[in-house]
Every structure is written in structure tokens, then in C-alpha cells.
Image (cartoon, rainbow, N blue to C red; front, top):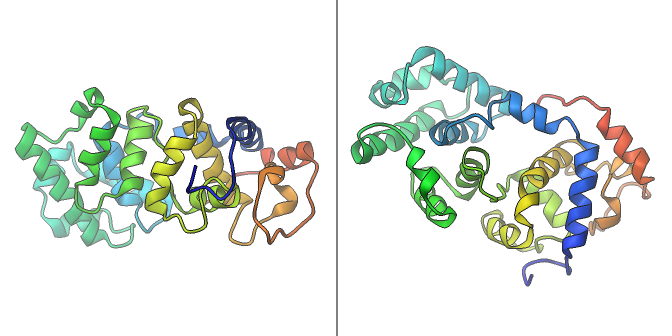
Amino acid sequence: MAETEHAVTREAIALVAERLSRAYPYIREVKAAEGLFTDTPLDSLMRAVLSQNTTDRNRDAAFAALQSRYSSWDDVADAPQEALAEVIRVTNYAYTKAGRMQAILRRLCEEHGRATLDFLREWPTDRVLDYLDAFPGIGPKSAAIVALFALDRPVMPVDTHVYRVAQRLGWIGPTTTPERAHAVLRALIPPALVLPLHMGCWEHGRVTCRPVPRCGQCAVYAFCRFPAKTAPEPLVEEAIAHTAHSRRKAA
């Protein structure tokens, strides 16, 4: 709690989760359509590498191109780096990402005889996170994505949107780094609320709690500690209705 800006109660966290789930009722369906809930652990990690410094649309286009071009991750490991980079060229830094992906895949082939992370299903969460974080180009966010979506572990990935929302809610302090925020939020948020709060905070940060926030449509205004609000507090149900009926735009 020392790294939060204000005292935060479990009751407040639960209310924020409930309001965000009603404000963005479509977000789970969106994430399911992207394949995040059906990815194997290795699929999830490769998708996380592709997602770095690009949009979700480009990430998914590159992932689909990989699946079309190669029959297995072992084939990806054996491909020339230049050829692999061409397949995923829709993402930024394609050559660098190709190198990172192949370094991970080749290590797995050396250690386990094939490219797989299925063995992580039997490991405790801390060991999973430490193992993934040791790969080149993989940090706490990418490791948390694999843990949450592919392994059903209560670990909160902290991207730009989640970080901004959590700071404005006072769940993390103003000097807490994004890397440190993973541990702070993991200790703060009840396990059952991690997945819905990750999705809700992600969409809230993308749609409403933007760098210049749209406070007049904020479903969790009452819990916000951000001093530079751009509108008076809206009626909760009106704010929820406004965003619940909006369409998700491309990232």
C-alpha cells in the first residue's frame, strides 16, 4: 500500500470493476475475437513480441501471416531471419522482432526438443514470470500477458492505458514505474478481479481516460484522484450507458 497515492479499499476496487464491466460490456468479446483466450502459452508470447511498438491490428495481421506461412513454431525458428522479418513486416521493427522470436524459439528447441511453453502450465506463477522475463525482449508486461490470458493466472499486465488509469485512481503512486506497477497491482487487486479489471482499465484508458480525459463520460469519476478533470462529475448510469453503446475503434 505504500506505493499507492491514497488508501485503496477492496470495496472500491470491486465497485470500479463492476462499473467498468458495465461501461464496456463488449470488451471480452473483442479480446476473444483476437484469439487471446485460445492462444497456447507460446502463441501468446509470440503475439506479445509482435505487439511491441505497434497496433493490435498490425499485431494480429502479422500473427495471421505467420500462421499462413509456417506450419509450426519450429519452422519459424529455422527460417532465415530476413525472410521471417518480411512475413511480419506490417509490424514496426520487424527485423528486431524476428531475431527476438527466433532466439526464444531456438532456446526452447534446445531445452525441450521442440518449440513449446506448455510445461509452464504446471509451474507456480512466480516461476513462470521469472522464466519468461529472462528471454530477450520480454519484460513484465509481456510475461503478464502470457500468464493472464494463456495460463489463467491473476497477473495484471500494465500497458500505457492500464498504467494511466491506475495512477489516476490512486492505485499506484505518481513515481511508481510501469515495471514496478505490476507487483503493486498484483498485491492490491483480488485475484478474481484481475482479468475483468485489466480489460476494463485497458478499454477505459483507450476510450475515456485518455491523456486528455473525457471526464464527462467517466463511469468511475467518483473514484478518480486526477486533479485536472475536464468536466463535472456525470451521472453514473448515464456515463455507463454512453460508453456501453459506443463502438470499439481501431487502436
